[in-house]
Image 1 (cartoon, one colour):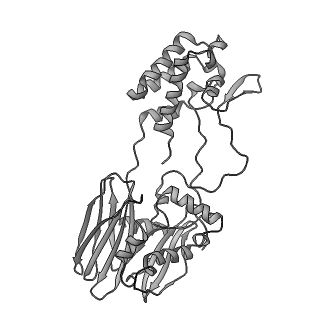
Image 2 (cartoon, one colour):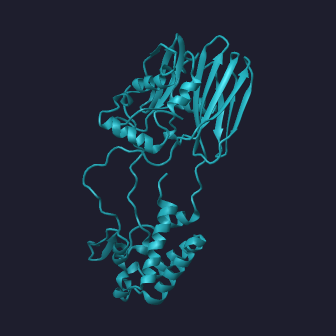
Image 3 (cartoon, rainbow, N blue to C red):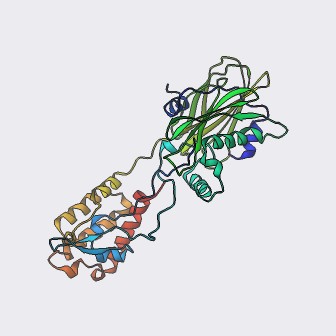
Length: 381
């Protein structure tokens, strides 16, 4: 949703809102209806890529472009280290990764990529406002209120109230009326703050949810007026808009189709008959995708193995387990690989374990297996 979208919705004064006494635990409860200073720290850097043990032989790994080294143990034995070489000895920059309710942002970005870009800006000194929860809340309010064409809303941002080291709320007053901005970061010092929602006593929202197909929520405005809702998926798509007249105390059940999004973000604006504008913004994430059983098997067989593993009974058993969970797209390649190892590879014959001695069709099959595994099991959110 663009700033113009927000401006079109917010054409009057600030909302009649009231702060909450608690912080993050209460934030989550109020956003779902189930009832200082810092920057957004990464959830974690993306883990180093690892390959399954049936590709552990050094020759196989080199053929697939993976750094591998045969390491000598204290007993004189050798093993293959499958950890990819680091591209640089320098520390990685702060980044967001993964998929987590901790990243349920409505502002200043709604995606991991967007937050990463803003984190880089803050690290470079271009967005110092995001390193302070009070300043971040003020910028959010500016985006929602001060940019109104032909309108001026005077607001005062009050002191940040921490719930814990990573979350809290920022009370404010707009044209004398109270409100609350709910803020969070994913770790401690060194990460930007983002907004997870805003609340209003005149426009209470309960039981907000999204099942991947429809957004639902309950509202009960405390004053008569007009209710506008702009619903979007947080991916830059155009919002779905609805407008209706409401009466004081009316129970409203929102039920809007929004299929195939990763989340639903609803900006709700109530314009009272007295001209007072009340704002509430909530986000509900869809269900996490179900991970294929093949990926679970792949995880269970990944790790370091001795060189003697290639061609062993344990090696064949692991390939067999993958075959049992594989989808048709990769079954032929796994069968080709399994049959070749059964017939041609033996721990007693080290040259047979070296991939450069294997037929090109088998080596091609290994590359297709790895590409398949990367797409299905190792791709990021």
